[in-house]
Image (cartoon, rainbow, N blue to C red; front, side):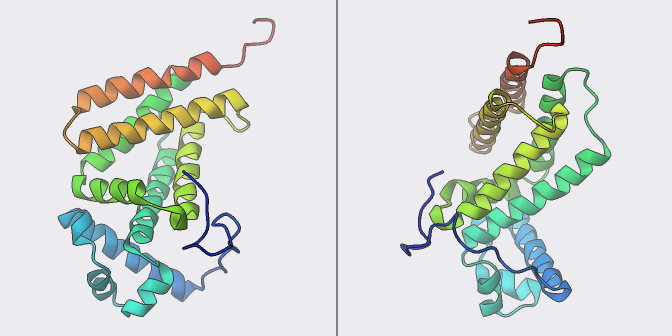
Length: 215
């Protein structure tokens, strides 16, 4: 995704100063907002997430909501980030069991897909927000990408990936995102998504470093 200014300002999105750490009370408020966003999206998808309704459901003033999330797109991308963080925690408690890295990554991404499949309206809302996100949402989108990368690298069992391995991870991420879009739009079956994910994960084997004494 392109990087640029915040609504035309001279400061780039990447150069924005880091937000100060939230207090315990602020973090609790943020959690309520994200929960309300997920609940509304689960019931009615993207259109059901209206900022006023989110504020009411979370028990915060509308102005307060906008201080946390400047737009509905920011809010839904943050909701996806929150969902991925929960998934990452779950996967670390119950890691994939495949012998090969490609198998483990495919299993991991299909587990993530099935979690989204259980909440199709929420999945659609989050993916649409990610697709609509402009430059002002770049930091939030980057966080989603970093979380997805971390999930894949965990499944691969890698702490220090090579540039080639990181390139393969990016292609896998793109394929997973595209598979979600085609499934949500009714253009791909779950079986086809599984085939596509398993196929792209074979890139991992191509970037594997040779064992000592080989290659």
